[in-house]
Image (tube, rainbow, N blue to C red; front, side, top):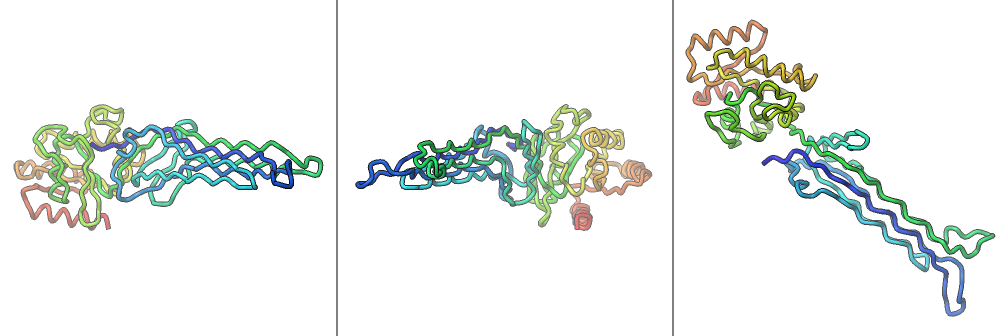
Length: 319
């Protein structure tokens, strides 16, 4: 199962308290201050990892906490800084601060700071003055930041296969790539996003969309978000339907309701199930799409030549 959302509380470490000791030696029973500074609390960072596919690392982990800094001690000994925590997430993860609404989009492996650890407190040696030679109070360490965040994964694929349930998307992914999605002759066989590779190009099979998907109906927005980062959409249309162009228009309307970007994303129309359609029907529906100025291709998963031709089209379009 694809884990593509997670809610977390993240807590950076507190700074260690500054020491508040006075020097004691065989010669001096009560000397001057010698309390060292406390160490800084650990911060929390996030880093994108290419080899991660989803957010299952956070499926059962609801809180991530960094360690506190070590307190300062006598003989002007500084406390150790606590180690930072680095959260690893897949590329395409959008992190939202649920309090401020600020977002961080993870698209590379550059570390990004999420929560700042508290600064270590100063030891009492730092407070010695001409008028106060033996200060006894060290400074408290600073409090580390706490945030509530939402992790929202949007898969990064170059090509998104979209269309109604049972439009042949999963079967197409099988023959185009090395992916092995479930395939069946009934709606909603695919219940999660599947990724396959055409050479070095990732292709995502998006579970079937229905009217009202942009409002969460059916499989809804859970999967629409995964086509936001694609370079090109392949709109699979079952040519055996009574009115394929109406089905196409319905999905396009859902795109417009969900995002301003999706309707202007480069798109290829692919009429599927050519092997069970009458030649006259194929010609008729192809013309209807072409009259709108749309580039239309046809294929059957049982026709190796049509699949090879379409692979060439995809590779040329992506490059």
